Length: 384
Image (cartoon, rainbow, N blue to C red; front, top):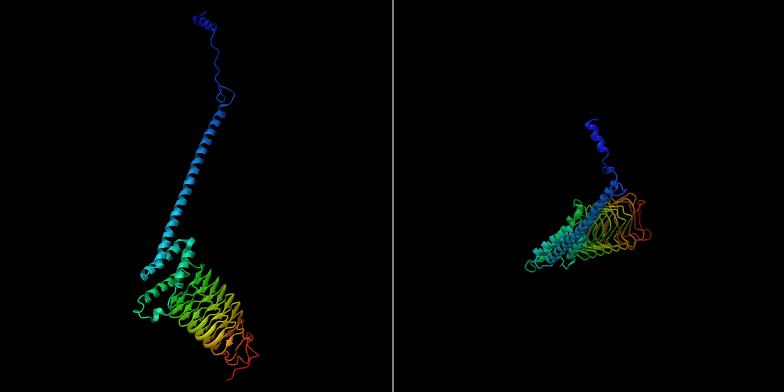
C-alpha cells in the first residue's frame, strides 16, 4: 500500500461535520417563502410609500396654487375697483380736462374688465344723460359760459368713444356690440355714430333731443335687439341716417316729433321685423326717405300726423311687407312718393283719418294706382 492510499483510508474513518446545503437562489433561508415574493412585497411597500408622499405633495401644491390664484384674483379685483373709483371721480371733476381723462380711463377699464364692462358703459351713457342746456355750445357766448365749448367737447368724446367700440373693425375682445346703450333723455347737439354696428342688446334714445349740430348715423347698422327713439325730438339739428341698415329686431320712432331741421334716411334699408312711426308728428323741417328700401315685415305710421314741413319718399322701394298709414292725418305737410317703386310691398292708406292734403304721386297714380298701393275710397278728394 502506498503512502497516498493509507492517507485516504485514514481520512475516511474520521467523523466530519454534516454537509451544508446551500439553499437555492429562489428559496428563503428561514421559511418556505420564495425570495422573489419577499422582494416584491418590499418593492410594493416602497412604491406605495412614494405614491403617498407624491399625493401629499400634489395636494399641497394644488392647495398652494389655488390659494395663489385666489390671492391674485383678489388683488386684480381690488386694482380694477380702484381704477373704477378713480375714473368715476375724474368724470365728476369740475375741470373739463379731468373729465376727458375720466372718459378715456373708464373706456380703458371697460376693455380690461369684461365682467363689469356693462357697468362702465352705463357710466359713460349716464354722463350723456346728465342735464345739458340745449344749444349751449353753438350759441352761448364764452363770457356767459366759458366752459360751454369744453363741456361739449367732453360729450362729443364720449360719443366718439362709444362709436369707436362699435365699429366693425373693433377686435371682438374689446367690442361693445351686444351691450345695452341707455341714452334716454340725452341731449345731442352733435355727435358721430357713423358706421357703428349696433348688433345686440337694447339701444335706447327714448325721449332724446336732437337740437343742434350734426348727429350722424351714416351707414350705421342696427342688426338685432331693439332700437328705440320713442318720443325723441328732432327740432333743429341735422340727423343723418343715410345708408343705415335696420335689419333685425324692432326699430321704434313711436311718438317722435320731427319739428325742424333735417332727418335724412336717404338710401337706408328697413328690413327689421317691425319699424314703428306710430303717432309720430311731422310738423316742420324735412324728413327724407329718398331711395330708401322698405322691406320689413311691417312699417307702421299709425296715427302719424303730417301737418307741415316735407316728408319725402321719392324713389323709395317698397319690396315686401306692409307699410301701414292707418289713422294717419295728411293735413298740411308736403308728402311725396315720386318715382317710388311698388315691387311687392303693400302701402296701405285705406284707413287714414285725414286726407285734406294727400301725398303727391306721379301723374295718374291716384286715378289708376298699382295693386300694391291701397288708397282711401270713402274720403272726399281734395279741392284743387
